[in-house]
View 1 (tube, rainbow, N blue to C red):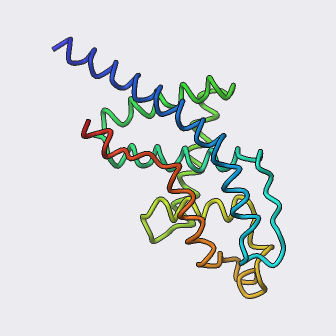
View 2: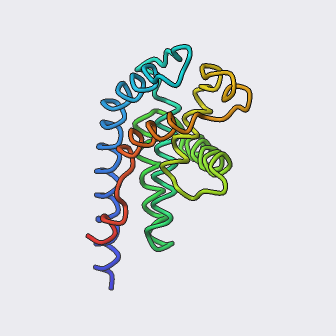
Length: 175
């Protein structure tokens, strides 16, 4: 029985390490493409000028969504341990306190849920959270600007980009 617990702990540590390393690399390498997609989107009447290095807000959105998906895919005991390990690793690499990062993740999960309601689609939620966190409404045509709502064509385009920042956690569970 003790071997089973040790093996589970090693697997959680390995999954957390692989996720954090790949996630940070993906955000570092992929965010400039997301920024370019936003800046070049024809749905904006004025270029938002998203800086390709301004990925902190997006990193938190994508991390919050991934950890939400961990909760949806893993049994409760395993999701809590894996989430804790991922946050510990991220906090260490980003030089922030565990509690501060946990608070920021929880705030982003709540924000995604609120702007995405009633939908449960995390990809759509990430895109909407991105839209609001980067204050993109002001760059849209008058109608969408006045209703403070993303143009659905832009949102779909952004969905196609942010999906690449989500891990396939169901596949991880099955392995």
